[in-house]
Image 1 (spheres, helix red, strand yellow):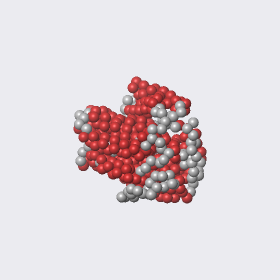
Image 2: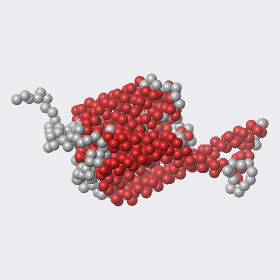
Image 3: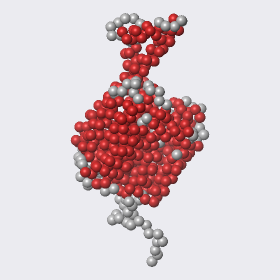
Image 4: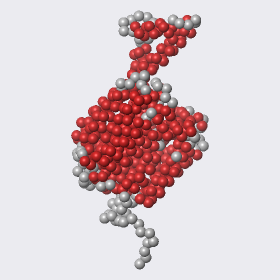
Length: 528
C-alpha cells in the first residue's frame, strides 16, 4: 500500500478536509477586502489619471463606471458560476483575474486600455463578495455565524471608507498607478490561502444543469444599462438626455423580461424562488436601503468638508476614518453577543442609532470643526455593526446550503445597487436643493428696503458703498455676496438631505418585525 509522505488535514463527515473556520475566514477576507476597496480607492485619483493620459475628468470617470458595470453584471450570476466551474476554482480564477488586471491597470499606457483592464478587473471581482460570504456561512455552524459575519463585515464596511484615504496617500506620495499595484501582493496572498484552505462542499456539482443563455443575456443587459444610467444620470441631466432615457427603457424591459423568464424555465441562472421566504425578501430590501444611505452619506461628507470647510482631499478622506473605527470596534462585539439575543433587537437599535447620527449632521453649521464630525461618525460606525452583522445573519438563516451561493449573490447585488442608487439620487437631490435655496436666498439680496430682509439690505449696502471706483466696488460686492449666498445654500442643502436620510432609516424599523428569528436550521428551497 502506498502511503503519502505528508498527511493532509482530517476529513469531516462530509468527506472534505476539516479546516479551522477562522483560517478560512482570513483566506476569503483578503480577496473581499481587496475587491471592495477598489470600488472607492480610485475616486480621488481621477484628476491625476485624466492629467497623465491627456483626457478630461468626465472621460476619466469611465474608469469608475466600467468597473462598476462589469462588477454588477457578474455579481448576480456568481452562484450559478460556482456550480458550473466549482466554487474553489471560480474563487481562484477570480482572484487571479483581479490581480493580473490590477497589474495591467497600473501599466496601462492610455485611457482606452485602462478602461478595458478595469472591465476585466470588475468582472473578476464581481464574484468575490458572494463567494466569500457563502464560504464563510458554510464554514461556521449556525450559532457561530454572527461572529463570522462580524469579521467579514469589517472588510465590507471599512474598505469603502479606507479607500479614499489610501488612494489619496498613494497618489500624493507615489503615483496613481500604485493604487492598482497595491492589489498584487494582497492577491497573491489570497490565492495561496485559497488553494491551501478552501474546499468545495460535496453538493456542488460542476457543470450540472443547462446553460441559461437567455437569462444571462437579459440580466447582463438590464444590470449593465441600469448601472451606467445611475453613474451617468446626474452628469447628463437624467431624463433630459436621450441617452439616459434610452438606457432606462432598455434596462426596465430587460429586467422585467428576465424576472418572468427565470420563473418559467427549469434551470434558471438566478433562482428567484428564494424570495418566497419573507425573511430573505425583507432582509434584501433592508440591505438595499442600508447601501443607499451608507454610500449616499459617504459621498456627502467629503463634499461638505472640501466645499465649505476647505479640507484638502486627503484630509477629507482621513476625516471619514472615525466611521471605520466605530465599525472595527462594533463588528466583533456584535458578532460575539449576537448568539445570546434576538438579532432583530440589534437591528432595531442599529437603525435608530444610525438615524440619530444622521440627524446630528443636520444640526451642524459653517463653523463645524473636526470633532463635530468625529463623534457622530464614530457612533454611526458602531450602528453599522448593529445593522450589518444581524441583518446578514437573519436574512440568510432560512436559506439551505445548496442555494447559499445564489442567495448571497442576490444579497450582495442589491447592496451594491442600493449604493449606486444612493449615490445617484443623493447627489441629484443635493444639487437640486442647492439651486432651490440659492434662488430663495438671492431674492433677499437687495440694497433696497423690505420687511424681513433688513440684514441682507445692510450687507448689500455695505459691500457696494466702499471703494474709490463705485462700479468696481459694486461688482466686487455682488461677487462676495453671491459667494455667501452659495455657501448658505449648500449648507441648507446638506441639512435637508441628511434629515431625509435619517427619516428613511426610521421608516425601516417596522419592516424588522416581518423577519423571523433565526431557528438555527434551514430547509432546502425547491427549484420551482
